[in-house]
Image 1: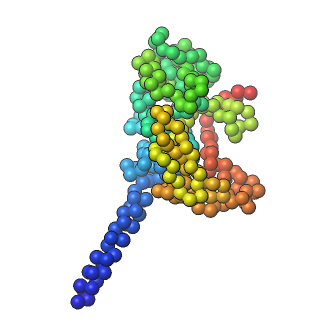
Image 2: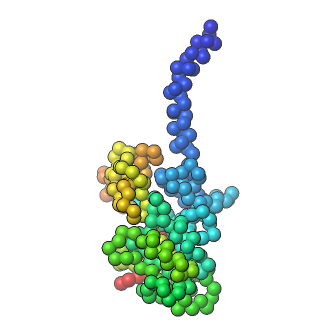
Image 3: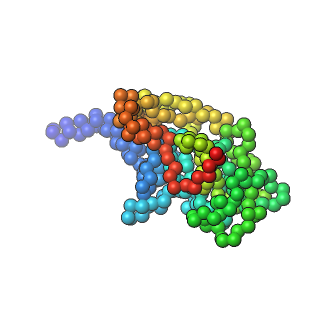
Length: 288
């Protein structure tokens, strides 16, 4: 009798328990850390993540995060913010342009207009430009993977089209038949530097989620027009709240950066780093 009663109770509870278990499993099925880098929804380092990234995680706690199907391309992830995915592109004369283009454009991200590409081995038909920063500035950097003595005339630059929000995938893909390598990139950086500057060896990809706005309470929905004009959005917690802003992520919770505490320098610095991220360790070329 007692066994039958317990079984009946379990049958009543089962429809409620299973969805809760599935939700917990879903929220925990994405690894958000790789070595010292932690990212927020929708990014992660396992197959269960909405926008998966690669990770070479070591037992000693270090790790290297990368974008794409193979680490060998050297599209290394250095930071992810509420707006952009930052890549570190160490100068590499063996990085294939065609293979790189395939990884830099997806239905969830694309290179923004602040990027300039440093390409190599282009034929006469290639529509490229002279570089505002001499190629030697990239190639002579200590992190360069290019052979010593590489000639500057073998390199040229691809500047973003004026008035466009993203680099043109069709044009960059066509360039892959005219130029062999994607050596490096540079990103125009207007803030927080006191004067405009170019970050060498950096590429900035703007990211989004497809579909109509769907954000957690206390989050702003930011509509995004994708390169192919699809409906998309991002979420960003309002002032005084912390989190990724997505209902399937951590949402928004009241944090240390509340308006009452924002007068303190430590909180202002903390809030700024949460919202914009930082790009330490990259070669900066001042435009002043």
